[in-house]
Image 1 (tube, rainbow, N blue to C red):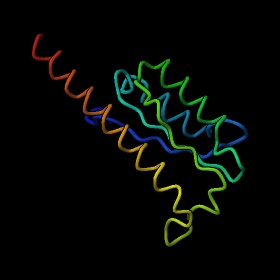
Image 2 (cartoon, rainbow, N blue to C red):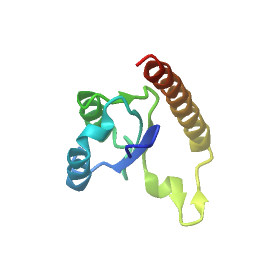
Image 3 (cartoon, rainbow, N blue to C red):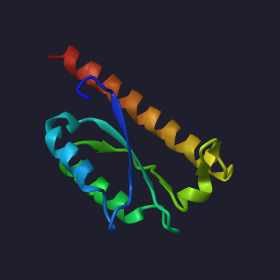
Length: 121
């Protein structure tokens, strides 16, 4: 994680938030998230795509000093969207492409800025 330019966090919604095991991992790795670009994707079996989980994760990573990409990728009714062979709902692909494009844009911007900052030190 320390050497990564960005992180993509994918989480199911669990009791209206993120799972405890994910919180434990984030707490353990806490210093690694400062100034790290974070893309968030959440999934749920219900119709809201883990939106509660998404809000909690945004707040958590912002409080750790991470840069959370404003475009996110919630996936509702995940059981109807993917199966063991892949994507069932082709409309999801367009949203996924935009999400990844934005994550890459922010990642490149922050990598460039880090390089400028470190060269002035």
